[in-house]
Length: 422
RNA sequence: GGAAGCGUGCCGGAGCGGCCGAACGGAACAGUCUUGAAAACUGUCGUAGUUAAUAGCUACCGUGGGUUCAAAUCCCACCGCUUCCUCCA
Image (tube, rainbow, N blue to C red):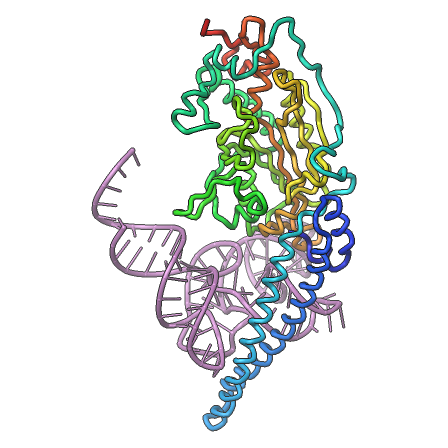
């Protein structure tokens, strides 16, 4: 949710953001109008209510004889109050309807345009070259007997899989390495719930246009989360958190569930795009003044992970039109996937400024003791998808896969994943 | 799943339908005293909306409805917690 004060003081800034995103600008004018209407209605109601409160007090103090007349007057007043309240409530509902449609105001410097208008900030590492015909991760998974897609489909349907043997261990090793890195950098580990209430899901901004991406359990009114970001953002909902000793940082591990409703036919091969995977997510609660700096820190840690996995990658600054509704800026890092001869997203880090926290009512006390809405940021430190890039990048001619040195301590020192099928 | 009880401010804990945004205690903060500290004493001590306003007004006593001139206080529903029983790990 955007800041109402910004709407009142500088609606043009919001319009500019809407333009950059390719969103409707006129909704800002509508919001300004709705806000004014609501405030007027609210004042109307409040002054009537004040009158009523005073009148009710008189009844209490009045003598037996005077009471009937006062009560009768009060009855009339009560009706007017009720009517005024209804008007004010309706105005507030309308205001919220409009205001919730406005997406977060983008940070200065975010490239304008749509999905293809991203700016490449850097390219790191050398893309692997092979003096043999490289296999894709599906072939490698079969050869090494570490990814069983066939049985995943048998048990759960398309876009499901089993990780097996070294595959399962590799994923856990990756998660553990990421967790260690996070812990070293002041992130508290959290294993989070993956079923959340509607308010939390809505608060994080996932129930907007893309709500059909989300699994929902109507019998229990719970949503399955597509990322632990949801639980991590809800963690401090309705709290005044203490940021006086610095930001609150969490590293949330969870399984993630995505319906992939809009991507039928896309990435159908392998485990690049699946309904269920695991992820370690960084999440920071911070003073908004420090949010951009924190964003760079998250990116830096993501890069450390990519480098530890010895992957070639690039970092992009996502264009405004491709940002999620909560994000004011988003950096993605994409690793080179040899079988596709292209970069694929492995991490995504968003600065949500105060947008998410305002919806979830997460505040802190500033230097003056005043409560202020906190800023929230999130970033990926590891996901199951990383296995795709790792396996394909480090494959050998015989199909075995070299394990990056940084991961070996988490795998009992193992250096290669051996071929088990001829 | 069945039964009973309970949900009040940072915590504990009062609260006859009007005088309750809420007693009292603790914690915290500030000050007095003290060489310093403790103790004692004094004071401050919720959040939000509206407003030019740290004035006023409004709202909030689990949540949502209702009754009433007036609700923390009565009624209904829901949610949560505790205990007992049952069940299952």
